[in-house]
Length: 107
Image 1: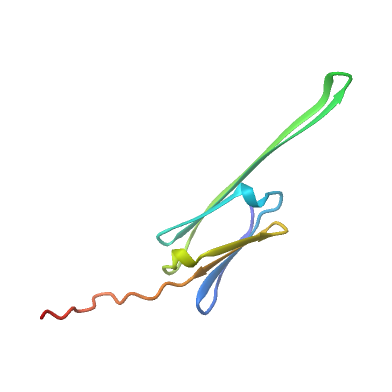
Image 2 (image 1 turned 120 degrees about the vertical axis):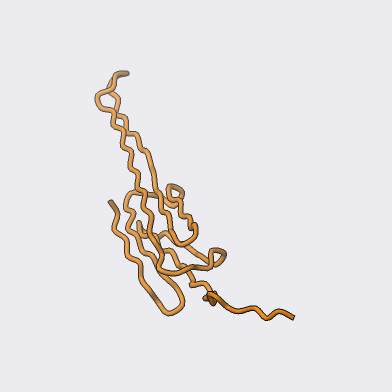
């Protein structure tokens, strides 16, 4: 299971997740309401042959799925993600607060 940290900064949340052995194309990141969904999956096959017969054949499949609850709403259109050396970094800018129960004047 990869490790991940969700950091609360001034105007954004920053998720850092270690995903060793995965490539950028193996990873899917989605945000729905106040939940960040992270999924990664890869498959790898290794074969060694000796005169037409398999001496060894290996298959390796790895997958990860995590849902992280966000403490506040975020601006979905402004989210950015980078993947470098097995580390995924997702920046989630905070949404402007909505004033609950704001009274509307009737004219």
